[in-house]
Amino acid sequence: MAFSLEKGTFDALVFDCDGTLVDSAPAHLYSIQQALAPLGLTMSPEWYKQRTGLGPDDLLDAYESDFKVASLIRSDYYQRVNEAYLANLNLIQEIKIVADVARKWFGQVPMAVASNGVFKNVEATLIETRLRPLFYTIVTASDVARPKPAPDVYMEAARRMRVKPDRVIVFEDSDEGLHAAQSAGMRSIDIRTVWSRDLSSSC
Image 1 (cartoon, rainbow, N blue to C red):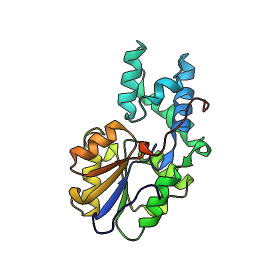
Image 2: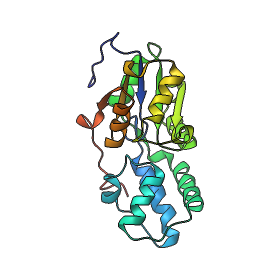
Image 3: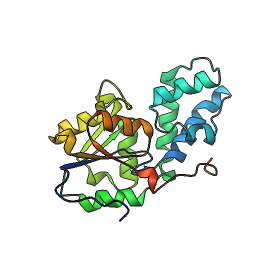
Image 4: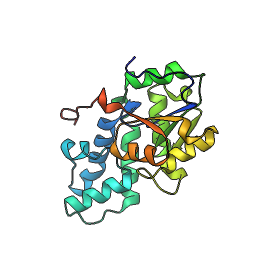
């Protein structure tokens, strides 16, 4: 197994969802492109790939700033994004080297998913990839005051699992997520050391 964890050195595992447990970037990018299309706008895979760790608002802030786009009506935009995402769950695949860690430790230690994503989308993603039964706890940005890179989602996951933050190992794929885990006082594993996505041919 790519990640070797020693029993007794931790009390819980927490996984980011998008880009860590599952490769959902093609589905997310496609849904964003579908939401921007009626406005005569698009988003390139190259630009998106550099910002996959950002939450929805931060991503849109960066897009509007970089391309000097007038502020979008966010409620309408997010509705289109979410509808397109849920209609294209077939584009999502598990990241096996990480999902296998969750399978191995299921039933041995508490495990949670902590994501900047929308709860409905995160849960649908886990159901689509048949990973949902592994996780009793799911925390998303709407459950806390601040999304990653703030530590809030990870602290809330630890609270719900009733474990001390310094006894948690976090699996992440973004600088923002790793910073959040560090700020929460948790150990972290950067899955990019063994896995990387290629969006160049996705959309």
